[in-house]
Image (cartoon, rainbow over all chains, first blue to last red; front, side, top):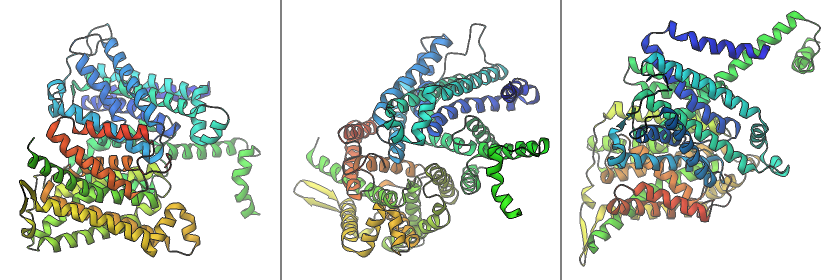
Amino acid sequence: MKKMIFPAAIAVLLLILPVMLTSYGIKLTAEVFIMSIFVLSLGLITGYAGLVSLGHAAFFGIGAYTIALLGKFVPNTFVLLASAIIFAALIALLTGFLFIRSSGAYFLMITLAFSQMLYAVAYKLKGVTGGSDGMSVAASLDFGFGPISGSMGLYYVMAVSVMICYVLLRMFINSPAGKAIIGVKENESRMRALGYSVRSYKLLAYTISGGIAGYAGGLYAFYNYFVSPDTLNWNFSGQVLVMIIIGGVGTLFGPPIGAAVFVILQNYISSYTERWPMIMGVIFVAFVLYGRGGIANLLLLAWRKISRRQKEINSPALNSSEKISKDETKGVTEA
Amino acid sequence: MDLSILFVQIITGLAYGMLLFMIAAGLTIIFGLLSVVNLAHGALFMIGGYFTFTFINQHLNFWLALLISVILLAILGMLIERFLLNRMYGKELEQVLLTFGLIFIFTDLVKWIWGSSPKSISIPPLLDASLTIGVVTFPVYRLFVVVVGCAVALLLWYIESRTRIGAIVRAGVDDRHMLSSLGINFKLVFAGVFAFGAGMAGLSGGLGAPILGLYSGMDNDVLILSLVIVVIGGLKTWKGAFIGAILVGMVDTLGQVWFPSFSMVLIFALMVFILLIKPSGLFGKGVDA
């Protein structure tokens, strides 16, 4: 029961947050939610399966273009979003089948090349996608009770979506398959020796990740009413990877934090100066040098420190094995 | 298609391939020894081009401008390795964030200093000619770039197989820890290799500027193609990069003539084809890098 307090508090906070925000803030927060879903999807393969992709925007873009292209013919939101997910997941399955044979830097470069190819296609196929001008989205978000177009409505759709994705991913990671995937990241050869089909588990994670990224892209198309090839560009993939690293790799609550920090910083800095890319770049570099594994990990460290102190206050004679090992060095110096 | 136009296209493709080779070779050599994918390598190429442009505008001749740019790029590479990258060894994600951040900084600096309108460098007068053999007319500068590319390949071969530095680097690629236990100053070797790679990117940028022009986003174009070349050729082998660069340069150039919308798709199809036959690339040894 106690474990549920924190997530519940966050959920309530997200639901009442719009009251405190300006209309611009609400719109920006909705964007943070979309990015959070996207970052969560990449976080699944990067943080848990150990696959560093620099081409994840491919799936986001596939989702977005699915809504834009299919939305001309099919108005139903459920059908559209489902197709965005299925189509992105299918492409992830097919490409993953080919790419996951390689790992490390190789995987990074191959995924990058793939997404750039899609970018080039979207850029050059002017007749279908509008080329660099992009295309507007005809369909509007409608879950059966009227079209949702105001920023408040969009906010709640995105907020609920990000919470659902978070919970689903949490369930997946705690499932036997999720545990096997983490095992693969920790020690691939041992998992293979234990009889796990390492490649299938990685492919499963990659496919799920692609589907969720497609969902994020689909939501983005509805949110933005407009889709451009930039949604497929590797620069976008790189930014999302940066969000994960800022937030914290290998955690589920890190990626949304990273997304929030990135989107808000970018908006804030770019409203003051044209030189925002340089300032963002300097921040990234400073973060790599002094960030210590992301905001989530910093928070976790702080949390552990606080809770340990709390325990010491509540029961000074506590002799948990963790406490002994942590205090071992301290005891030696005191003695 | 007219035969002479085809020949010119082939030379153009080869010249482009050689420019890409100098970048890709730097990438794979750096990756081989340092295990770093330097995403900022395209940005270094771009800076090399803009430096050369600036020095020519200061009334230096092309060759001197090129030389100074290469030296400055090597120094820049050395600084990056010594002050930033050397803390990131073995941390793949951090390297991605660092080099990605450098792209933001470098491309924005270029925009700030030189503006976002495209620039061009005229071909050095010595080579601004065309050579006619029979019915076919070759642009001399492009031929020259092909020759330089081949010379760089020869130089790499010589350094790798015939010199002490080459032996040290080869040993480092195979076993990095062995290097330091043999009493070799590996810090110096690492910085040197990174500086060398950055210098080659600068050389390529300066040489390429008269052909390709200077524009924002050029770093992106060459980076993507160079990474594809590295994937096709195989990691840790500049020989693979040489073959891969010729393939990609030709497919890109000829593809743009025949299928202007789909040259990138052709290159990707080439990559997938090669990966299906040989997952580690043409000259690669292991799949896991």
